[in-house]
Length: 99
Ligand SMILES: Nc1ncnc2c1ncn2[C@@H]1O[C@H](COP(=O)(O)OP(=O)(O)OP(=O)(O)O)[C@@H](O)[C@H]1O
Ligand SMILES: [Mg+2]
Image (cartoon, rainbow, N blue to C red; front, side, top):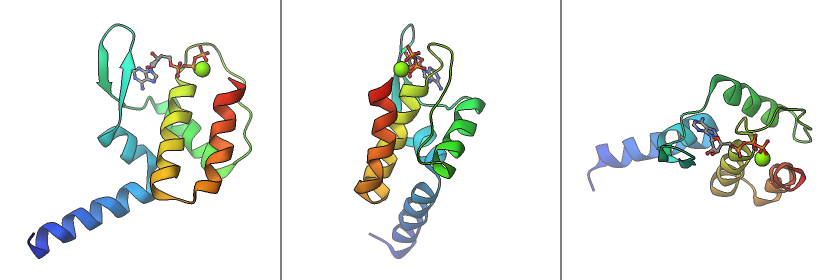
């Protein structure tokens, strides 16, 4: 593998590690009820909720039904498992369990 390609992959890995929204939008698929398997293009409110999760690890979400919060928590948990300490995943999974 060329040094240029290694550098590009390393930069992309770092970008994903720093930005869960980038990771989810570029590499994650979700199951849409009508459209089937689609890229996880986060809605603006999901990006905002994601920032709240990161700033407040013990969040409780008061929400309407079917907004995509479980999907977001699943994506966030995946990001934590891949890029960060596994211990942190407990808080994100807790969101799923309370759902
Ligand atoms: N950004 C998105 N783009 C398209 N579809 C999405 C997006 N986010 C979530 N969905 C889809 O919306 C549906 C509802 O998502 P999800 O079950 O995560 O919502 P929820 O808020 O947890 O719902 P509930 O209130 O029933 O627990 C799912 O089919 C999911 O795949
Ligand atoms: Mg849910």
